Image: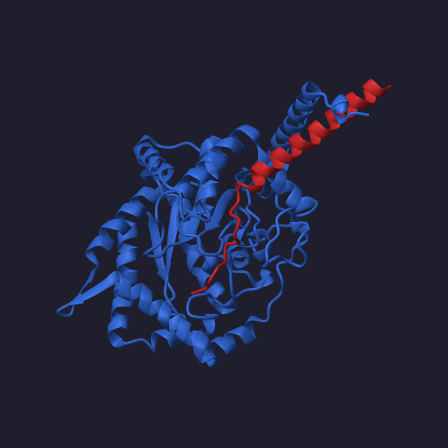
Length: 40
Length: 391
């Protein structure tokens, strides 16, 4: 039981980190500062 | 219990791999279907100004969803002038253009603030040309416009995303130039970042997925210019109805706004034209640069499908600049028009007969100016369609 719980929590944590890494690639691919449009 | 006993590196890294892979698969799926809903034009909430960077896939899928492939697609690109700043969404010039052109045509407005000929709408044109065999691209075109074929830094992500995702093909003639630009951009930090991000996106599809999340569920990037609230799904952002009549009045009566318009005209004209002994000419370095950039914006075979529109400024503002600047401005517009024709583009010049009330400010068209624009563009689009044997 403990082993299943251990593997499950490690896997779940890994999946979350995997998703986060994928998101970070997006986050760092767009400019940090907003683009301000000036009409003139 | 010791925490180390709870750690299982192999399974943890397997989890990372699974999580990352799920995201890639979702990104690929989303890239096939994601589109902008009830799309009429780009507006503040779905533009890069608000950290929303539309993807090539969204532009492609929105077009495929809205425009039947048997119709002649009239794709509008260019700057805020064609986006319709000065017109509310129900009085947009592109709606009138659709009405004038009739059912055989389908008009799609991908113009966006600050964009030049090859920027944004230009990239969409390159992509959509592979999907629509009858397509005409209509864009604003000004001197001092594009820096290079991939456009300005704020929009060039779209070009390179398309490049690395193989969404459009290049002609042999432009391949050398594009590879050269890529090489140059590798040498700057910003350029390298854009290329790495676009290349990695072609492998991992993170832009389609997280842009989709931001559009449909909740927006994950916030800034101090954020929309109604920082996490609002961008599909809920509204193209607000604005009282342009009072803005128009304010532009006329407010000396600061008015002067800004005049300064703009002075700056553009002064930076572009020389008057030597009463004879006008484009500044030497600039003439070559303009010719080169417009020549590199699209390959020759594309140009018969492109209508470039050179727009004049508000007569009220022009009346306030010096006689010399007025002459130079006229010369600049004629020069741009002629240069475009010489390079094989279709081109028209509009705005000469517009009155002050046709403008919102120095350059943008109010409702009546938009209507006049649609009338002039519709005539030309029909001519081009006939020349291309679409009709």
